[in-house]
Image (cartoon, rainbow, N blue to C red; front, side, top):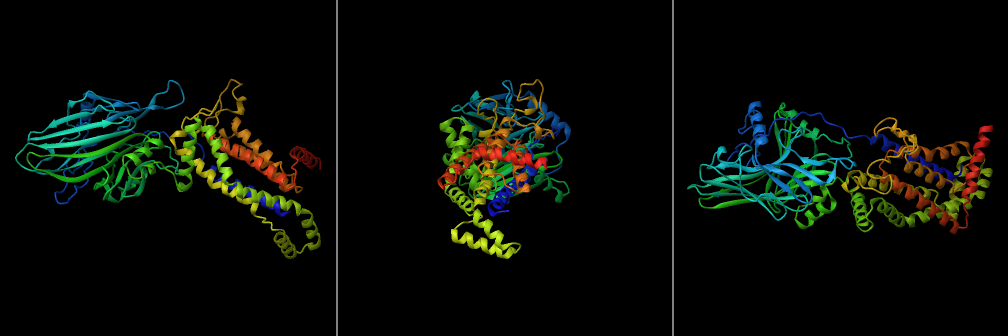
Length: 614
């Protein structure tokens, strides 16, 4: 076996093994549906100790640090919320409402996104109130610290009054008001932009004759795990927070296990931020995040209540002392929406939310995934189609790697020229392997040929392939993004199938995740196999039967393996194969070698027929 064929086989087998491992680890499968029952209501935070400068985290289990709230009050709370007045939220991106019970933001849908590609599909619902199947909401308030009791601050059951505003729209803020019996007037002013960011300003006016101390808080509570939890370990879903530049990702199972050491009792994981940060819950495409003002000290709290099956994230601001006749205020932000790169980048750069782009899960290859997506996004702005943008991105990547590819293909061409001398060397060496190796090394050195150069372009493609897989899998810009014709979602496998002749026959095809789906080859996977097969035909079929068999099977094995991958990734691979074919053909021609593609195809068929006749 000559060294050129050894290198080609080595590179091909390496690529095959890597993709096989990837296919086994990350098989395509439908979203895992959760059957979590509705959990009980999150109770009002408890009074903390008066000693620390910053209030202690609120208790999730009740108005006082005791056991979970009983069922009857919870039922009463659900009934209270069901009959409560609401204020409509209406923006270009969001639709929903705010309940006047607790002043909670608990009903929110994303106008720009639908559950499926069907025209009549429902829009994506992000937040939902208590009493729904999956309660998920944001709640704000004050923790009583000194000079005021827990009953003197608004809680989850407080019924707020509207002071100003009828509908929450961009440029039309909403102000809620509530007054206790001890001379404290509480106001909450909520504004929203045209995308997904709420600004919440909480104020307390002290008209009493004594000072009071309290700390503002905000929390996001999620009852049970989300129904559309993906479950892929390459994607983080769960709690996410940034604390003074340190990113932390905690899965739902990790939050649950946090309480094992305490015998199943609720326990909080607290981090103190000196200047910047945020905390919340992230899904694959959506996120709800609490954001304190920049350069503000706060406590970031993550907790899980096993008795109520509630996951909770909190921000707790420093205690403020409000003298008689004075007014204190505390501002914060709430992001609730789609993880759109452009919007999140704007909030990071223009609104001062530190490292907010890291809320998108770029993975370990972030040094590749971030620039690849930024370039893809830039191309899409000008082209207006993600499919064509992927093809142009492939051209750019191949252009960047062209110097390495050129050296590789030149080296392969030179090795072809050395074939006659290698054959003579093998005849002289006979069975003396050491003499053969020494002679070949001298031959390579004298002719300045690197036998391993042919593997380098393929090896460099592997991390790029993985990075692009990650980009297509996690970024919302690829979700439901069409290319043309039958490809309506670049983040999903090719929906066409050879099993029904690509829609010509009147029956369905296996669902994604089915064991039979691998045989449901679409048009794109078939084109992928053909492109790999044609690329092989730049060189004559190996004379060795084993080598020839490996080469013959490899394009079709890759075709079945990658057939279940996202269409955008298969488009990249087809474009990559096509450009590689053109590069290699032109470089070989420049070195005086004229590839006989059609002759190699016919020669391969001839050798296969001869092998069958033996």
